[in-house]
Amino acid sequence: MKDGGVMVKRRMLSDINALYIQEIMQLIEKQSKETISKWCITYAKENIIPIWNEYFPDDNRPSAAIIKAEEFLDGKRSIQDIKSEVIICRNLAKEIKDNIIAEGSIRAIASAITSLYNPPTSLGIVLYGALMIAYYKVGVNASLELIDTVAIDECIKMKESLLRISVEKEENPVKIKWNC
Image 1 (cartoon, rainbow, N blue to C red):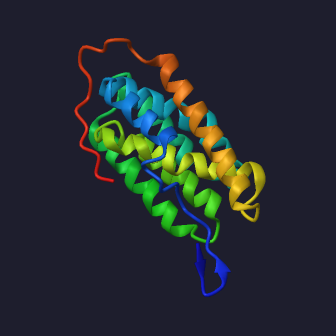
Image 2 (cartoon, helix red, strand yellow; image 1 turned 90 degrees about the vertical axis):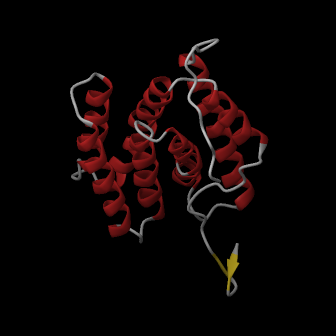
């Protein structure tokens, strides 16, 4: 995208109709809320938190939020605790607008945590996370073609990670109305 001749960096993937996004959405629709949330939280912990820590090693708020999300999954936290962590993450994203990778990373983390009570937001870890991982790997000034290639590869990894924990013939699949 160009704005006055200057390349504007995308903050998230936006081609919802792309096959690699559609496949993830279809897989999400076949899983329980618990499976989806576990996938999101685990993916954020393993793949997004390290990127955040690269930029802000002394700010443990995102890591603390992920830990609380894991505790919620274990029945040790309330939904109010989780909603408070989402607010913290979203406010943090507003504070760091000058660092697109860190901002997108915290938005992916917030989406992962929000999936605990709002399953459609699970797509946020894909849309924000894959692009931020691509930016992190090749740089924000890399060609759009290279960035897209790396982001698509990351989406494939995300799908594979969800497939690994998917429950075949899930008896309680989540009912999702995609608002995108």
